[in-house]
Amino acid sequence: MNSSKKLLNKNNEERKPQGISAPSSKTTLGGGAQGPNTKAIVLGVFCVLLVLVLCIGVGVQQFKPQIVLKVNDTKFSMDNMMYPIYERESEYLPSNELYEQYMGTSVWDASYMGEDPTVDTSLSNAEGLKQEIINAETEYEVLYQEAVKADYKLTDDEKKDAEEQAQKALKGLSWSQKMQLAISKNKLVKRFEKRILADRYKKDKQAETDATVDEKQAIAEVSKTDLREYDIEYYSFSKTYYDEQTGQSVDREDTEIADLEKELKKLAKKAKKADDFTTLLGEDSESSITFEEDAFTEEDGWSDYLSDANVKKIKAMKNGEISDVIADEDTGYYMIVKMVNNNSTESYDEACDEAVENAKTDAYYSWLDEIKKDYTIKTYDSVWDDVTIGTVTTSIVTADDLSKMAESDSSEATSEDQ
Image (spheres, helix red, strand yellow):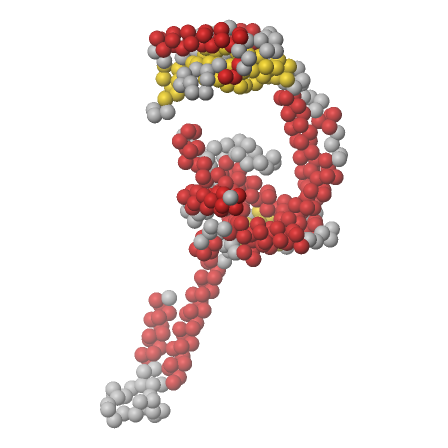
C-alpha cells in the first residue's frame, strides 16, 4: 500500500506543470489553459482505484468464509457452523462454573456428554461435541436431500413452526451478537425448514428400520438374575461428614457418634410400631441422621454404604421388614433399613428397554451408512483442527447473557400463566 502511494506521488510530481506560479488575485480559477493537467489527474485517480481494487481483493480473499464441510454440491462454511456451535456451547456454558467448582475441571475438558451414539465417549466433551456437530450437519443434509428426492414438501404448519423456532433462537440476542454469530431470521428460518423436513423423513425411515429389529433377540443377553433389584428405605449417619465451607471430609467426634447411635436406636424402636416409616424424624428435625430411598441390584450391590456381609443380610430381609441398627465398621455408616421390595424388576425392565432402543438405533445408523455411500462427503479437517468448542461463541454470548435470557423467558412465562 505504501509503495503504491509513493508511486502515485512520484507520477504526480513528474507530471506537475512546470513554470506555473501560484494563482494571483487576477488569475481565473478553473481556466483551461492555466488549470491543472487533466491527464495527470485522470492517471492519479486510476492509480488510486487500482490500489483500492487490489486491497479489496486481498481483503475479500482473506475474510472469505472457509469451507468446512461438503455434501455432494452443498458447501458449508464456518459461518454456517456458527449457530450449531452456539447451540452446543450455550447448552453447557451455564453449568461450567459449577462444574469446575465441584469437579476441578471445566465442562469442556470432561468426558463427552452428548447424545450421538457414534461419538467415542473417551473423547473430551469439547472434541466430542465438535464431532457431534459435524455428524449432525452431515446427517441432516443427507436426510434433507433424500427427502427432496422423495418429493417431501413442507406443510403450512411446518413453515410456521420454522418461523417460530427462528424467532425463539434470536430472542435476547443483540444486533452485534447476531452479526458475530453470522445469523439472521431469514437464515435461521431456512435452516429450521430444512431440519423439519429432514426430521419428518427421518421419522418415517426410523419406523421402517425399527420394524426390522427382533426385540427378543435384543434382550436375550440381559440377565434377569443379575438385575434383580432391592428397593429400600433407610435412616443413617456416617462417621464423617462433608464440610461445605472447606470442601473437605471431616471426622465426627466420638461423643457425637455415640449420641447419634443412641438416637438411631430410638428410631429403630419407634419404627417397629410406626405406621409410616418415612416420617420417624418429623418435619422440623435438625438431626444429622437423614432419611433416604435407594435401590441396588444383585450385580452391583451396595458397597458404598455397607460391607458385603451386611448387604447379604439386607438381601435376606422380607418385604416390609425393618432391621435393627447396623453399625458398619468398613464403611463408617450406621443405619436402620426397611425392605420395600426385594424382587423389583425395574432395573431389568429398563435394561431391556435400553437394549431394544440400542438395537433400533443400530438399525437406523446401518441404513444411514448405506445411504451415505451414494454421497460425496468431505470434511475439511485442516479448518476444524483450529476450532475449539468452548471458546468459539462463549465470548459473544456469555454465561451472564444466557442467565439474563433465561430469567427473561421465565418472567414472561410467569406473566402468561397469571
